[in-house]
Length: 199
Ligand SMILES: [Fe+2]
Image (tube, rainbow, N blue to C red; front, side, top):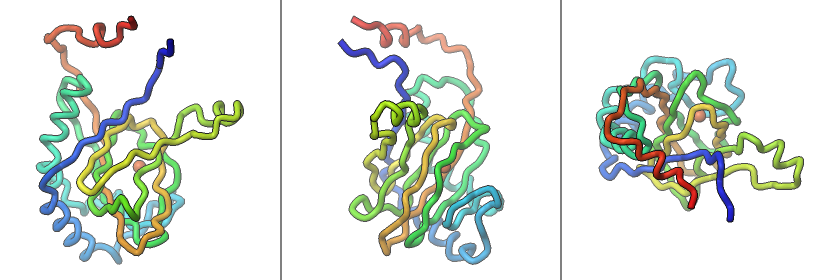
């Protein structure tokens, strides 16, 4: 019998009607694409709105709210959600982003605005013990979930991840965000105990 003791969970969702976000992102990028570089501490090549305060967060948040509600229910993360950052990354041909984390943060999300699963690669999530595994000859140290345009992945902010080089002529773009859950007492029963029972 095999028992997975400490799994890391990624949550994947899909937003059906994403045309409004896509159009808004196109409009924003058209206006700002020549005005923004990457922050000094980033060692990568892409367009980002990170740290500029120019990205229309409110409009995206409205579209994301039902999905974030679904995440709170599924993850049993009960409490008020506090969004701390949201930004756009655009990867033209040969753009990429190095391995990084989103601290300080509790949860982070990535929403795939422009993404062709036949030409693009989703975010790589790296095993936190990858050097330990490598020293034991285990080479599969990252997971790249299959995603399509309109998908959202929510992951713990401490989990290292990276964006592989975009080798397609098509643009790949994502909206990233960080949030905290201010926990409240949950009175619906301790269902976690039941789920964690090993038979
Ligand atoms: Fe990231």
